[in-house]
Image 1 (tube, one colour):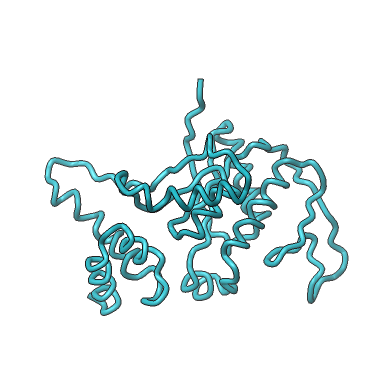
Image 2: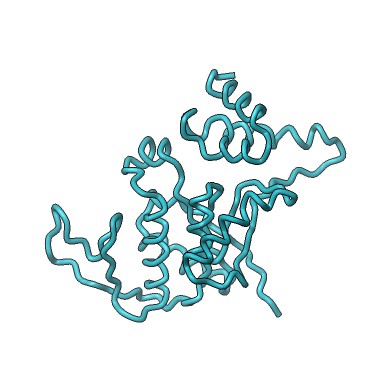
Length: 230
């Protein structure tokens, strides 16, 4: 029988090193009996630089490096080494003591640990298909798969990968009740936060995605009101 996944953590990559994320994911995978999915996302420049205090950098390059490092840790084929743009393991840059050495994880993890990325931009979708096992689009209209499919296909081709087994797992808010308007009420603030405030006017990936879904005027209206404090 097929295993039912019981938990997913979507971690913002700039908030923790890939090694830390790997240790967290492997522990949760063990606790769940191998039914855990690791989700990672690049976040946006407002949060990355304004909250985590690190450079936004190259988010797609970060994603590729992050996935590569976690897969190496889970596989335990050799002590971890990585020389990339965002991450160097062992670290040998400015301020290094020179005492770092490659290590292996003490925990023996599932080398097939599944990694999903949160993505809605064309570049993010291509990268997900290129290196990950699935993607979490925050919203999805089943009749507008054209917003995802072509970009995923490009990523599969670029990575030389078979799309079989790749999951598209959209985030779907659920509100139960008999009163439709009452059920919609708690969903609206979440939509307003992402479309209106999850990034400045000139770089809000969620607002841009809502516009591509066909809600250009509505998305701009939500953004205008949110940024005006209303």
